[in-house]
Amino acid sequence: MMDSAAPSHPGRDTRAISALFSPVPSGRLFAAMCAVNRVRGRVMETSAGSLVMLDDTTVEGLDEAATAVSAFLKDQPLVALRTQSGQMAAARYRAGQRVEDVSPGMALAHAPSVVSTLMAGGQSIDDLAQSHPDKVFSARMGRVRALRDLYSAARQVRRSQR
Image 1 (cartoon, rainbow, N blue to C red):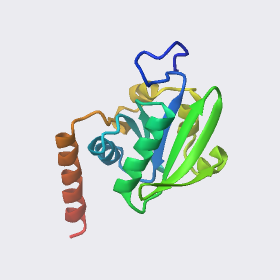
Image 2 (cartoon, helix red, strand yellow):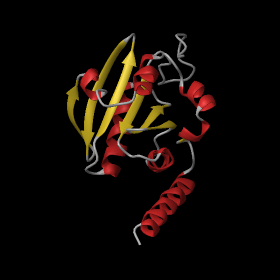
Image 3 (cartoon, rainbow, N blue to C red):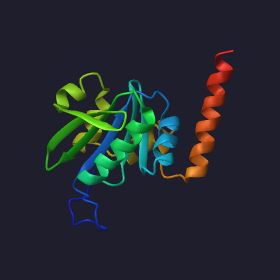
Image 4 (cartoon, rainbow, N blue to C red):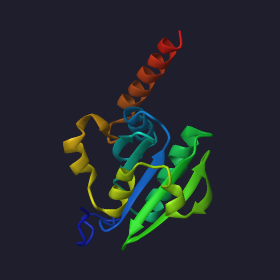
């Protein structure tokens, strides 16, 4: 659960929870996409896509992360989620642009319950990493390693299409 104490370093509000949810099915691939775009956090692979819990929980950090990752994803939808003081907000991004604010209920209507639980602070990504170690990935890798992971994933896709 998030600590309600003062921020441990400038620009980070530890009482807030910020995340990006995407239909990218591979958590490992989504972690690499985030890392290439200098978006840091931990990724949870779910049945409906991947969720990155961001290290930078500020409003500005969330917007920058959503803009960068959605530009990389091009036409894939991306939902930015933020919870602070018990209030959740959601916005859709596409191709590097904030498209619209949406109600959190609508944004999470088809998401697995684990997404809501994480956003409500009922569980932390660390809790889930202990019970599902094969579904949680770090997006804190260097860009070179992230590019290697992306290249490796692309190669696997090409092989499977043959």
